[in-house]
Image (cartoon, rainbow, N blue to C red):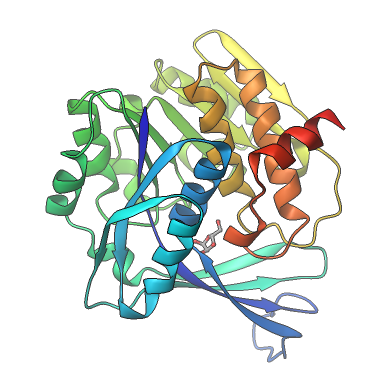
Length: 295
Ligand code: RIB
């Protein structure tokens, strides 16, 4: 099974801050790093490091060619990435001393993706291949519909949440991954069990995965449920923790692992990721994750 991730590619400008900037405040950062990122790019790298055969599709501007090179270096196939006239998507990320972040996104070329691009990309794949997507590109609802019509297995990481998600036929997904914010937005409640119950009722054939940061993660599929606590680590930067989780969860899910197995592998991978700075650069290799799980 091949995985095609029709996803975002961003240049991340990461500012290390003494605290998050407050309204009306001007504050100097302690450092600036320019990294490869984007939920799409990060998830492609995570899935490839986890052992899946990954193809990334999406759009970049001319200054984003190094993002393509980063993907290729991680073993991701990049010939479905189109260079466009727009500026490459970027993110302005503040990281505070506890490792928490907040992010301003500029979509740029990520929103140059067209339905024609999607059709051209999907034509290269087969029934039973996996389509992975996030909510940082255009055409999210179209991708889900077309993938379903083509008999492909579709995983949506519904991050970041936004009004367009109301148009997405979530019941056509095989996997829906949300954090507590996206889950609350889609389910209309902040109670984790109720989020799983409501999304499960709306999407009876979908595996629903809910990540809860320091409170671990939960998943439900039909009558089966699983819950795994977070692993205690010293966090320096939580950026791409959710992306790492998604890539590793799908690796185990693709080989038919139980919900608990999928959550355990993904939890270990994302715990390692938060101990390192950066987005794509923080994603661990499969062997490291296995060793960490067995330690
Ligand atoms: O999930 C982390 C990512 O979110 C960052 O790499 C940034 O680009 C934003 O898309």
